[in-house]
Image (cartoon, rainbow, N blue to C red; front, side, top):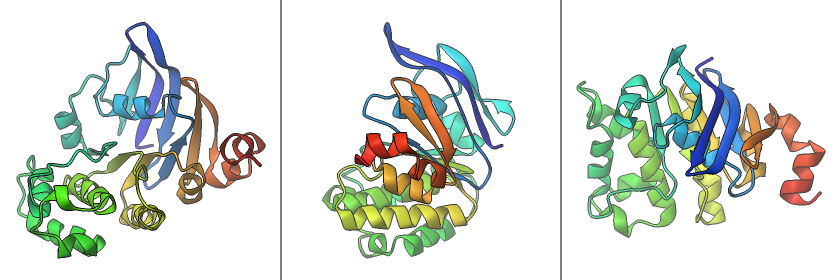
Length: 234
């Protein structure tokens, strides 16, 4: 088990976002979290990365508690985040955004890793000297993944990566998630596109009003009657 989330609760003022939520990610897995808007899945992801404060529970990474650690400390532990909305530096070039992803690193492999990311995302190679702000939304999402991968994570968190993308870019991003996973990186994915998220997932969790409603393998959840009724009206 790489990540274990134990009974966590997060409140915004007095409003419950999630309560007593538990889930886990094994090494080498893609785990998808799906659910309606406001169900709490993005809050759970932000709790892991130290962006919201826990009111209860604990989070273990590689058998050690990471509760209360700052995002930069979590990067050192081996966790990276592809945030919702991409959050790039629009006035900086593609290359500079990738280099920013490695700002905490002290090793000499940074240039080699940039080359690997450009092989993974060839569209970025053609745009390497252009500012991130002029890229298409799909190219920006690729760059957001590339920047996170520059931190050489053991666990990659991805928050709604398909939002705002054309169908072609959605398909490309999901293909790249599979490729990233095949290199040994575990992935925890929050996604509105429930069908595609479950199709690539080893396991999945369905959120409902701040709790985990269902869990199972990706294949099991794809044919689950409740999932089919809620997400694609079957």
